Image 1 (cartoon, rainbow, N blue to C red):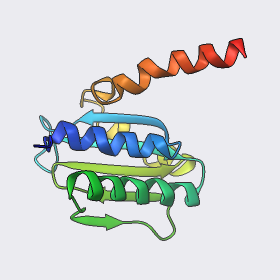
Image 2 (image 1 turned 90 degrees about the vertical axis):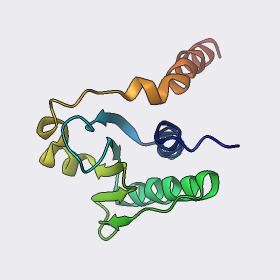
Image 3 (image 1 turned 45 degrees about the horizontal axis):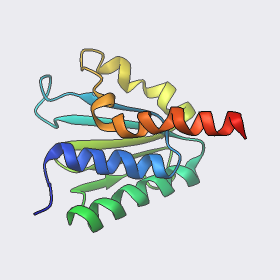
Length: 136
Protein backbone atom coordinates (compact mmCIF):
# COMPACT_ATOMS: atom_id res chain seq x y z
CA UNK A 1 0.00 0.00 0.00
CA UNK A 2 1.41 3.41 -0.94
CA UNK A 3 1.87 6.25 1.56
CA UNK A 4 -0.70 8.95 0.81
CA UNK A 5 -0.19 10.99 3.99
CA UNK A 6 -0.02 14.76 3.67
CA UNK A 7 3.70 14.57 4.46
CA UNK A 8 4.23 12.15 1.59
CA UNK A 9 2.23 14.35 -0.78
CA UNK A 10 4.19 17.47 0.22
CA UNK A 11 7.49 15.57 -0.10
CA UNK A 12 6.50 14.46 -3.63
CA UNK A 13 5.56 18.03 -4.59
CA UNK A 14 8.81 19.43 -3.19
CA UNK A 15 10.90 16.83 -5.03
CA UNK A 16 9.06 17.56 -8.29
CA UNK A 17 9.76 21.29 -7.95
CA UNK A 18 13.42 20.72 -7.13
CA UNK A 19 13.70 18.41 -10.17
CA UNK A 20 12.85 21.45 -12.31
CA UNK A 21 15.42 23.62 -10.54
CA UNK A 22 13.08 25.57 -8.27
CA UNK A 23 15.10 27.56 -5.74
CA UNK A 24 14.55 29.30 -2.38
CA UNK A 25 12.02 26.58 -1.61
CA UNK A 26 10.32 26.88 1.78
CA UNK A 27 7.61 24.80 3.41
CA UNK A 28 5.65 26.74 6.02
CA UNK A 29 3.51 24.93 8.59
CA UNK A 30 0.45 27.20 8.55
CA UNK A 31 -2.02 24.68 10.02
CA UNK A 32 -1.88 26.24 13.47
CA UNK A 33 -2.58 29.71 12.08
CA UNK A 34 -5.32 29.14 9.50
CA UNK A 35 -7.92 26.61 8.43
CA UNK A 36 -7.26 27.05 4.70
CA UNK A 37 -4.30 24.64 4.59
CA UNK A 38 -1.77 22.79 6.72
CA UNK A 39 1.23 23.77 4.58
CA UNK A 40 2.24 26.49 2.17
CA UNK A 41 5.06 25.57 -0.18
CA UNK A 42 6.86 28.57 -1.68
CA UNK A 43 9.29 28.21 -4.56
CA UNK A 44 11.03 30.58 -6.93
CA UNK A 45 11.63 30.25 -10.66
CA UNK A 46 14.07 32.24 -12.78
CA UNK A 47 11.37 33.17 -15.30
CA UNK A 48 7.77 32.53 -16.28
CA UNK A 49 8.63 29.57 -18.50
CA UNK A 50 10.44 27.83 -15.65
CA UNK A 51 7.53 28.60 -13.29
CA UNK A 52 5.19 26.83 -15.71
CA UNK A 53 7.58 23.86 -16.00
CA UNK A 54 7.75 23.57 -12.20
CA UNK A 55 3.95 23.74 -11.90
CA UNK A 56 3.51 21.16 -14.64
CA UNK A 57 5.98 18.77 -13.02
CA UNK A 58 4.42 19.12 -9.56
CA UNK A 59 0.98 18.37 -11.01
CA UNK A 60 2.28 15.46 -13.10
CA UNK A 61 4.19 13.79 -10.25
CA UNK A 62 1.28 14.10 -7.81
CA UNK A 63 -1.11 12.73 -10.45
CA UNK A 64 1.14 9.79 -11.37
CA UNK A 65 2.45 8.88 -7.91
CA UNK A 66 -0.53 9.81 -5.71
CA UNK A 67 -3.50 9.91 -8.14
CA UNK A 68 -4.02 13.49 -6.92
CA UNK A 69 -5.25 16.49 -8.89
CA UNK A 70 -5.31 20.09 -7.66
CA UNK A 71 -8.62 21.55 -6.55
CA UNK A 72 -7.64 24.85 -8.15
CA UNK A 73 -4.88 26.15 -10.42
CA UNK A 74 -4.43 29.92 -10.77
CA UNK A 75 -1.92 32.20 -12.47
CA UNK A 76 -0.57 30.07 -15.29
CA UNK A 77 -1.01 33.09 -17.55
CA UNK A 78 1.26 35.00 -17.34
CA UNK A 79 3.02 32.70 -14.86
CA UNK A 80 4.60 35.13 -12.41
CA UNK A 81 2.70 33.61 -9.46
CA UNK A 82 1.21 30.18 -9.98
CA UNK A 83 -0.93 28.73 -7.22
CA UNK A 84 -1.70 25.01 -7.00
CA UNK A 85 -4.32 24.32 -4.32
CA UNK A 86 -4.40 20.71 -3.15
CA UNK A 87 -6.70 21.37 -0.19
CA UNK A 88 -4.44 20.56 2.72
CA UNK A 89 -1.42 22.21 1.09
CA UNK A 90 -1.03 25.08 -1.33
CA UNK A 91 1.97 25.33 -3.64
CA UNK A 92 3.04 28.85 -4.67
CA UNK A 93 5.52 29.25 -7.53
CA UNK A 94 6.84 32.76 -8.09
CA UNK A 95 9.23 34.59 -10.33
CA UNK A 96 11.87 36.36 -8.21
CA UNK A 97 10.43 39.87 -8.48
CA UNK A 98 6.90 38.68 -7.77
CA UNK A 99 8.01 36.74 -4.68
CA UNK A 100 9.83 39.79 -3.30
CA UNK A 101 6.84 42.03 -4.00
CA UNK A 102 4.21 39.86 -2.28
CA UNK A 103 6.43 38.64 0.56
CA UNK A 104 4.34 35.71 1.76
CA UNK A 105 7.10 34.77 4.22
CA UNK A 106 6.58 38.15 5.90
CA UNK A 107 2.78 37.78 5.91
CA UNK A 108 3.03 34.29 7.41
CA UNK A 109 6.01 35.11 9.64
CA UNK A 110 4.52 33.24 12.61
CA UNK A 111 4.36 30.00 10.66
CA UNK A 112 7.22 27.60 11.40
CA UNK A 113 9.54 26.88 8.49
CA UNK A 114 9.50 23.08 8.26
CA UNK A 115 11.38 22.77 4.97
CA UNK A 116 13.96 20.41 6.47
CA UNK A 117 11.28 17.81 7.18
CA UNK A 118 10.55 17.58 3.46
CA UNK A 119 13.97 18.07 1.88
CA UNK A 120 16.24 16.10 4.26
CA UNK A 121 17.24 13.55 1.62
CA UNK A 122 17.88 16.33 -0.90
CA UNK A 123 19.98 18.29 1.61
CA UNK A 124 22.03 15.20 2.50
CA UNK A 125 22.78 14.57 -1.17
CA UNK A 126 23.80 18.18 -1.91
CA UNK A 127 27.14 18.15 0.01
CA UNK A 128 28.10 14.90 -1.73
CA UNK A 129 27.40 16.48 -5.13
CA UNK A 130 29.45 19.57 -4.19
CA UNK A 131 32.34 17.36 -3.05
CA UNK A 132 32.26 15.53 -6.39
CA UNK A 133 32.37 18.79 -8.30
CA UNK A 134 35.35 20.08 -6.30
CA UNK A 135 37.43 16.98 -6.90
CA UNK A 136 36.76 16.70 -10.60
